[in-house]
Image (cartoon, rainbow, N blue to C red; front, side):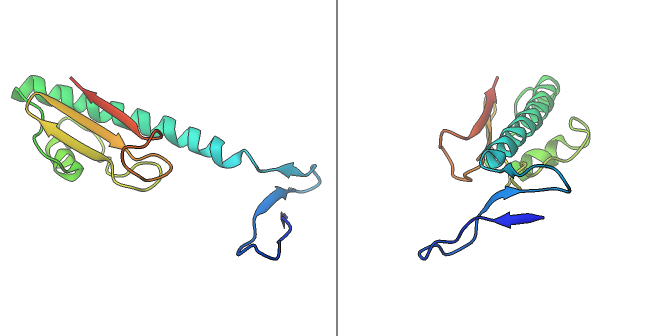
Length: 127
């Protein structure tokens, strides 16, 4: 059962404040969103590290990184030889960002807010 928080006269939507499952006690959900975002940040970091490792393998064999400003082009070059699975979107279901030159690259997830160049972005760059 989910109980909705009180709705003020000025509120435009309901907000979940607590929930109760079965015969357990009521649980406040205030920190739930940030806990979920932390798990997603960890998953995004792992995926970016996997892509970065594949990029390193690509560079060792080919002599340079993939030159592109699109993550889709990067994945097309890496998969399946250097990257066992296709990774196109981050845990928030937004495309990863890629900027690559022959001698360096930057991989980015826009993080929970979905906006570029903000403090919550997850960035891996190399070499």
